[in-house]
Length: 176
Image 1 (cartoon, rainbow, N blue to C red):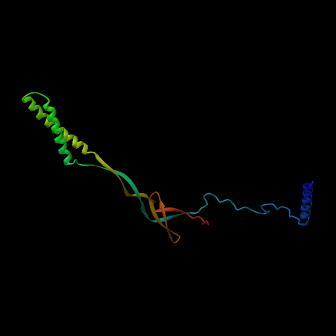
Image 2 (tube, rainbow, N blue to C red; image 1 turned 180 degrees about the vertical axis):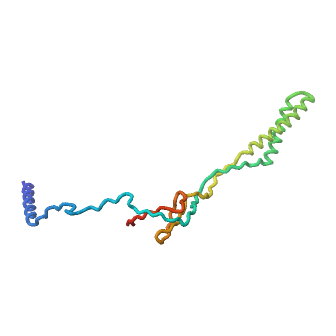
């Protein structure tokens, strides 16, 4: 009951406040007689053909990575060791074959064949490429820096293609 009394009292107070301070009726928006500005046509920006003073190729430095591989020459120590080890192994194998003079010939042939094989194996294992990645600067073409003069002032613009003797400039109002 107390809450109902408070609500009724609030309604009475707010009604009396509205009666003391009248509110102006709402106004129409936009006001009568207002004319919006005409739309700007798409191609209404003035264009001028002006001479080109210079067009210089423009480059930018970028770091590029590439892989470089070099074949290392075989070291003499490995080649000599391979020849000796191959000769000894070949001689031992050749000694197992034949009898008498045939055994001597087989041992000598095994030693020569083993030395050649050992030398070839030593050289092939030493002839592997050594590769490394290097990073180096490289000049990359980015366009043409074009200098022109318009209305007594020089301007510079970068273009992706080489211009001819003239370029077209659009004049737009400055925006803040």
